[in-house]
Image (tube, rainbow, N blue to C red; front, side):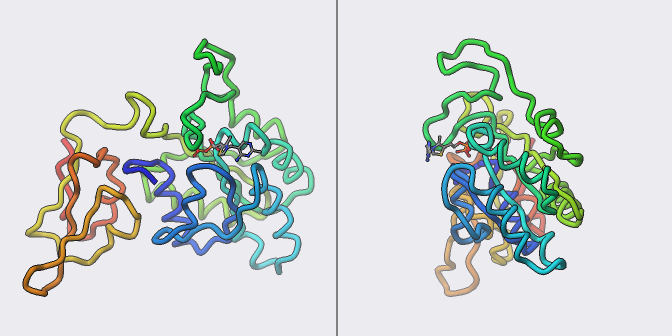
Length: 249
Ligand SMILES: Cc1ncc(C[n+]2csc(CCOP(=O)(O)OP(=O)(O)O)c2C)c(N)n1
């Protein structure tokens, strides 16, 4: 995943929540890879929600609420709506996360029916994803900022505990959309080498902007942030217990 990718924090938290994650096709499929390790199935476009509906049927009741489907906005609009309707209709007690990054990122940032633009780039009617989910019969629909790890974890864990279907929508645009990726000038983060203890907590999110510098004398190494790659999304900063990551103005 790119530096600043809004999908990263969701997978980090799903891993920590020990969820059974049914995946789908898009940039976020990379959530299966180490160090995020947070995707258990991936079959084809739209299979995440239908897999989740099926898996809850064969799990013992105490395990059913651990099932979470993840699906991108484009994939959801392409072929996830029908499965969500079925999930609502047959009351599968799983959680669906719609990763709304406002674009079809994996195949080259094409517009989609919720982006507000047609494929020609003309202004177009914009599907309201939360309203659509409610119209399909999902009673619990909420939106969360995936750059806020605590809020993301709270939303996921609350919805996973609900014994009925629910939807969590993430609302940060793809960092490759012009103007959306990089935060204000000076937002790039840096590691205070004096404070960094070399605990490697920041490496657990797999951000390509974070490098590991081994110590030349064989002591513990330290993390280093490449200023050319960092977007200032702050996800790594939230993981550092030693306040060693800073620099956001
Ligand atoms: C049946 C089918 N049609 C089209 C594709 C090409 N394709 C791969 S990923 C993708 C959509 C990705 O967009 P989204 O779900 O929004 O996720 P993102 O990459 O933005 O995270 C598409 C259309 C495919 N893999 N299979």
